[in-house]
Image (cartoon, rainbow, N blue to C red; front, side, top):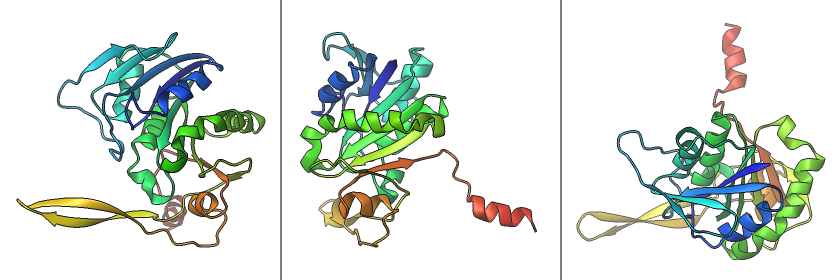
Amino acid sequence: MRILITNDDGIYAEGVLPLVQWAKTKGEVTVVAPKVEQSAKSHGIEIHKSFEAKQVDLCEGVTAWAVDSTPADCVRLAILGLHMEFDLVISGINRGLNIGRDIMYSGTVSAVFEAGNLGVNAMAVSTSPEYYKDAAKEMDKIWDFIVANDLFRKNDMWNINIPTGGSDAFRFTRQGGNYYSDQFKPEDNDMYLPCGIDVFAKTDNSEFDTDAVLVDKVISVMPVTLDRTNLELYKQLRKM
C-alpha cells in the first residue's frame, strides 16, 4: 500500500514521526506536509504564485517534502505536481480535535477532502493537545476497526477523533455543533488578537461527534463527503 502522510501542524511536528513509523508497517510511506504550521487554513490553496517544495531528511526509508503552503496544496502537489500515486492519504495526527463545525476551518480535514476530490481514499486523525504525544498508539486499533468494517468500500473519506486518554470503544457519528469560538482582544495600532474559548454544550445526543468524544470518551468515526448540497431541501424543491 502506498501511503501519503500530511498534516496542518507542520512537517516537524511531534506527531509526524510516530505516525510515519506506524504507517511504515502498512506500506510505502511518503510525507508531503507544510513547512510551517497551517492550522485553521481550511481548504485554502495557492493559485496566483509559486511556492517552495523542498525534499528533506525526515527518517530512514521515507521520502519527505516540506511545502510552503497549505495542507490541501500538499496533497495537490504530491498528486498533480510530483505525479505520485497513492492508495491512502492520512492527515494528522492533529494536535487538537476536529469535531463539530470546527471541521469548516480544519486544514487537517481539508487535506482529506482534497484527496477525495482527486480520487484517493483518505482519513483525518485528530486528538486533544493533552493526548497528542501518545495518540499514535491508537492507530493499530483504528486500522483494525477500519478493516473489520470495510470502511473504505463504504465511503472514501473519514474523520476520526480520539478522546484524551484513548479508548477501546468506537462510535459512528455525525457532525455536532460548535465547541470552539473566539473572542477578539483589541490591541495597539488597530490590531485585534483572536482568543479561543470553549463553547461546547452537552446535548445528550450520542450521534454527535462532539458528545461522543468530549462526553462519552469514545473514538468518533465519521463519514464525510464533498457534496455540500442540502439534499432534503433539494428533493422538496424538485417536487415543486
